[in-house]
Length: 313
Length: 327
Picture 1 (cartoon, rainbow over the protein chains, first blue to last red):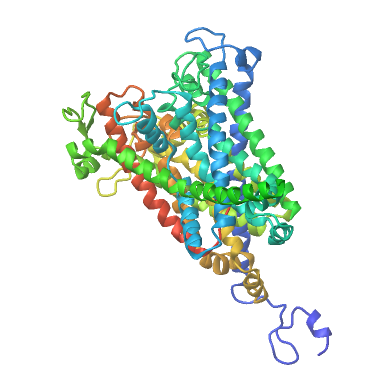
Picture 2: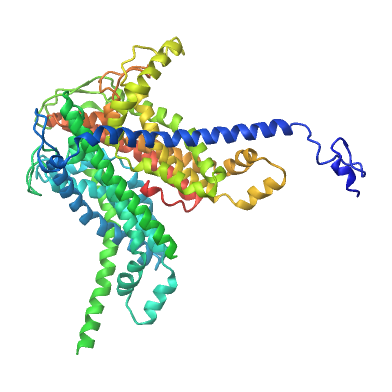
């Protein structure tokens, strides 16, 4: 085949009678246009999807920064005056989250350990751990307000429930139930990443199963486990709806964990945003900014830890 | 001596640990069962008093103030709230699904390798924003600056549309409305749909795509005719999970939907959703109303359960899709 023909773009056929590859034929032009159009649409969609986050960051920072100063964290909120802050909310959120972490992280981790380490041993175990995984997945989709209703009926309400009244503990239980499936599922994925050779090496040294799990598997998976738990905390800290029916909210500092209605930052934001006067709304933006920062820091830290964990593989 | 002691301890410690983790695993069922039983039990008198079917379809909600389980005085028709929940969730899905599809395809197929991680971070970060912040931003910024002009434009341009008596864009425009809540919900469920769709299309074999390229297909044709068809059931599952999230969302909806007990066909009118109504009325509820709100909660739970179990079964058929738990 001579090469001179193929450089001649005007030739419709090659020497052998076939159509030259350089001739665009039929709907090729339309296809190229379609392709370019689709690329444009996808790029535009990507841009649109990023815009809300930037707008939220910008607006929350712009309006919240003015409210944040030292007093915001150290004083309680008066119902009518300018000064005052969300101390009650910060302390309350710390109480609620502390309890929720203590409940959900060990339980979620233990669930993941069962599914990955013990559930694979027998056929019945495999079936059970499949069921556990399925229902933890389903649990992530349960509306948080429903969890709040349950905890209200179970712990707070005096008709039929345990009648403990509104307190921080009930809030912890509700948030723990919301965090549990997130912790369990992400821990499960992380435990699976630990190579079986490490487990076998531990057995070969004479370690029992529980010891292998506690001293070999868990430390190896630690950064990844921390990632999942931190993401769960970030989710839990921002929850508002279940707190309405478990801790009720308080403008003033409550030092008891088991007695009396407790405050929380999301609740104070919610109440502040519905007030008519400017100072209350400004405080709400301040609260929103601090909550947002807390969540962002947790998520970024978690992702950073997670990427380190993935490099270990 | 110490060796036998440690061996004895080991003999106890190992089974004890096994029992502990097994019980922890089983706790998931206990919690789920507890939730179903406790709330259904509390809501039962209301269902008995009103009748389950008329509770779902009645469109009048008048809270009563009885303190006992028997002398109820209210009328409980939850339809306005069920309608609000369904409409806002559907609006959210209609907006979020095409956008999420485009974003997922952009990140997985078009974006330069260096940009992939930052882009997917910035979408996932949206999922981490607490819903109260979405509510505040939506109410104080988006509503006056973007949504109100948009809704007014819709009303003046499409207000005449009349589909067999249904006027979707009939005025007057109040701002807070089904459409406003649905649009904010769309932003909120965008990350979860995107994350799952990305995982689903990542499962598609690269060899197939290369084969299509080798046949001369353009990038659009590969996405449209190779990747999309094999990802179809995963995309359905992703949108169902997004729908489930939208149905259960509370605080952001509560701030944007307007909180009225009436319901109206127009997307521009204010209404209320199940979750938002529970949260808004809980603080001042009498014992009877609390039970009625519990009954709404049970209906809401049923809705999300059906949606979620369906979606999870679909996702599980596709195989291992992980990572959406945290989104």
